[in-house]
Image (cartoon, rainbow, N blue to C red; front, side, top):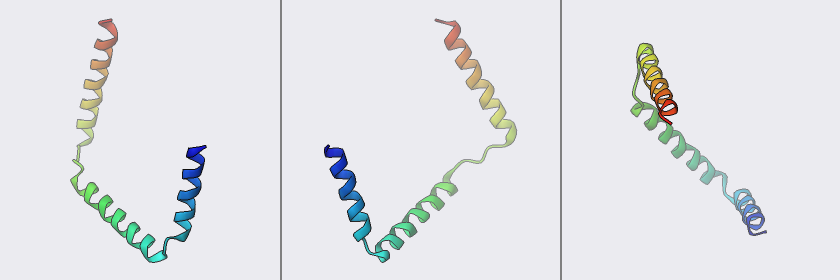
Length: 66
């Protein structure tokens, strides 16, 4: 019941927010996404395959050791 009240209050607050505030929030979120994209490491395609093999071998060893 409390969750339903929280949901309804959140929806009501969302409707009452000004469009300027929403636009500002969207702008901040887009900026955060751009920063995170710049910080993401770039892997060569062969590196992805190597990591996949390492993960698969670790998984197999974990299953076989049981």
